[in-house]
Image (cartoon, rainbow, N blue to C red; front, side, top):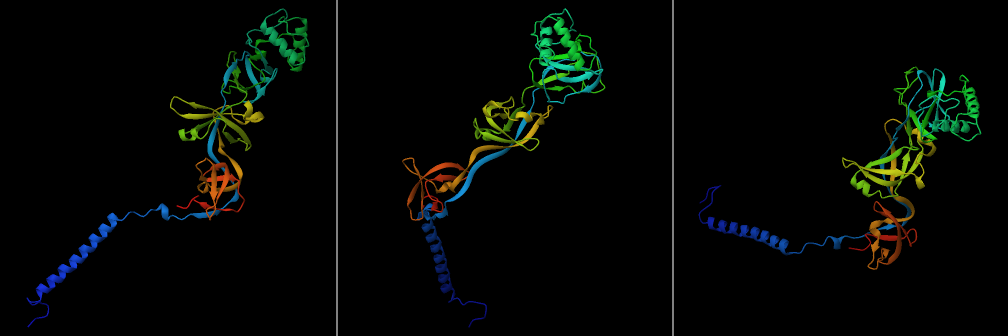
Length: 361
């Protein structure tokens, strides 16, 4: 006789054997799975990857980087003021191009002009004087149309008449004498210049000797700060499209690479065939500080034509390239350009379906 919830002694051995058999089955299943897993070769993922197809279509392929080009002038002191008195007007803006006889500013209403010459003004000139400074004056008067005589270096009667005509054209006292402060000589003309606004502005008193005039090169320098990786993608000749301060497009080309003391890399740009990048619009670049101009560095020139993914290209052992249609037929092609995973090709028709990747794995 049994009671609910208990097991008779005769039944217990039977249950024990059932439990042992169940455990054995579980262990055997685990061992079998492990053996199958360890000794079965892994599935070849590549062999099971099916290709897809795409159609050859017209498109455009190219590549570029968007970076800032830095434009800056490198001013050099070229002239000092020798006039004394109050600045009554300033006639030029920073970066203006001046030529022989251009008025820079006025002191006590008397014009101060610029002229070409290697010798700085150091004295007043009048009849009987001679020297290279007289020759410089004579060349300036000839350019201004007040004399047809050659520069002799001697302040003669012809030079006196020319000076008087020049003074009359400038509405200053006509006396035939040139004051030391009337002219600032600079090495080359025409040239772009700037006046030091801290030393020379309307209402400022001058004593003479102030270094007020700086000369500028014909164009600012254009550089692009880059990383090592960016520099590697910009070989000499790479084209750069620069947006000017007024929204126009300037074109530059990679000409050189510069590394400073902190190992910072800058790409130096130049205009086409040695021309200025900014041409006649260089005045848009401020003389002081740097201008940062948004630019597109064209690492791969854009080309339009028949386009396919680069993965559709099959490189043959003989160096030729082909694409493969869905039936496995190879079609030789010529690659015009490649960028960003796409290629422009020649040699097949628009609309041809090709495998991607080029061969079935």
